[in-house]
Structure formats: C-alpha cells, structure tokens
Length: 298
Ligand SMILES: C[S@@+](CC[C@H](N)C(=O)[O-])C[C@H]1O[C@@H](n2cnc3c(N)ncnc32)[C@H](O)[C@@H]1O
Image (cartoon, rainbow, N blue to C red; front, side, top):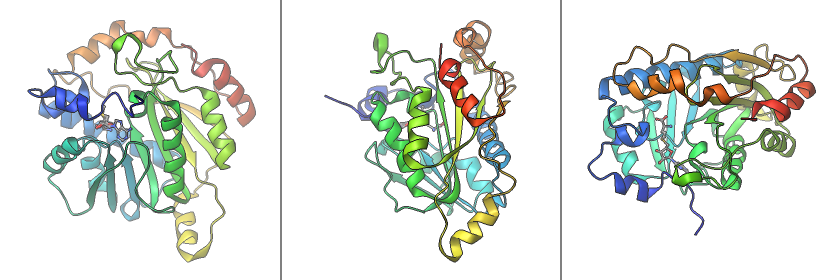
C-alpha cells in the first residue's frame, strides 16, 4: 500500500512511551529546554531567509507551516507574524502543538490529508515547510506539496521549503529508515516550468550534519485587485528573481545545546562530507545547470 509518510499515524502511535519531542527530533535525549531553544533559532533562520528573499513588515503577514509537528516553529513564528497556520497529517501531534505553543489566538492548526492543503488559493503571504518532505516516500506527493504551497500563496508571496538531500532512492525507505524519496534538481526545475514561478534563492549550510537545502520560490502569477497590489509592495523589495545567490546559514544553531549530543557527533563525523558543493553563479540557466550537475549529487 502506498503511504503518505514514514512519520504517519502508525509512527506516532508506535512511539507510545516516547515523547512528542523524541518523535520530532528522532532523539530521546533532547530536553524540552534545548528543543525550544533550537526551535527558536531554526525559526529565526527561516525568517532571515524570507527577509533576505524580500519579505517585509512581518507583523502584517500570514504564514503557513506544512507539517508543523508540535509547533517548534509555529510558536516563535507567532511572535513575529500576524497570523500563523500549521497543517499536519497527524492528529496526535496537533494536540501536542496546542499545549506546546500555549495556543495563542494568532495560531491555527488544521489536520490535513497528507497531500493537499485545505485552504483556497491566494490565502497566505508566506508558505514554509521544514523537515517534512524528506520523510515522504512518494515523489508525486512531495512535488504536489510544492504545487499546493504555490497555489495557496498570494501573488508575489514566497515559498520556503527546507529538506534533506542525502537520500539516494526514488522510493525512499532504504534500509528500513524513515527517509523519503530523493528530490532531484530536475523536480524543482519542472515545478518552476509547470507553475511559471521563479526560484529566488537556494540556501544551504556546508557544515549541516544532515545536509538541508532551503529552496525559496516566488509566486509570479500576475496580480489582480487591490489586496494583491498591497501585498506586492510588501514583498517585492529589490528581488531580482533571475539572480540566484548561494548563502550559508544555520552554523552555530545548536552546538552549544548540551542535549543535542547526537547532532554534534554527526557534525564531526557525519555524511556532510559526501556532499559536493558548487560555486555561486550569476545566471539562472547556469545555476540550474549546476544544480543538475552538482547540487543533489551525493
Ligand atoms: C520531523 S517532524 C518536523 C515537524 C516541524 N516541521 C518541526 O520542524 O518541528 C515531521 C512532521 O511532518 C508531519 N508529516 C509527515 N508527513 C506528512 C504529510 N504527508 N503531510 C503533512 N504532514 C506530514 C509529521 O506528522 C511530523 O509532524
């Protein structure tokens, strides 16, 4: 049977005695305090990426977090954005999110079906997803989330998806792990072509022990009506979508957190050594060529 995620209801039910934090971090040693600190820093990195990609006046913007889990990112987002919405496949984790985030009035959480976003088009200024796509074994569901994210974005809104790139299988689940299908540069290129949107930035941290890429896409649908004009002025900034920049982020995000022992071990000895990195390029086409050649080659 095709399943939507390796972190599905069965995964959470199987955790039984383990905490939701262990479910999110895949590590039972992480303490609630370190979990929160790491979440705050991770959220700030995401916000920095949105700002570097053109987002302004954050306290007027709405943001969607796909696969929000127990709200590690929702909670710090809620302090900076006007409205924060989280969707997740799992009912149990959304209950935990209500407790963890202390349920402020600007956070809404909704259970989804594991592949679609239950909101109409043009609903959000920003769409984020982190640490989710790499657990989905079906590449069509993964790319469906790119399409869904872009659909629910307002014109000129920004989508920022963060995911690991060390998977080698298109089917996922190699060696019984919880890793999903490998995402290739050509998948990103196809989505950009199919939806007519623009790649704004790709971020990575060469020292990330679990190599992640943040792909930032701008919704380029022509705007209509008053509301969209207002959003344009908030998000357009000085973006030149055809110029892609490479930046390193995340370094220093958790090394000082005592209970993130395992991550620190991976930092020293982990698979980041296998990644091939690329040099910055000025043109979109060259960049995509380099992405195809190098970015996802592990
Ligand atoms: C590793 S956790 C990350 C949670 C959160 N993004 C964070 O950074 O704390 C992955 C989350 O994705 C959710 N998830 C997995 N597959 C999903 C799918 N197909 N659709 C929606 N949510 C999914 C899981 O229930 C889980 O809460």
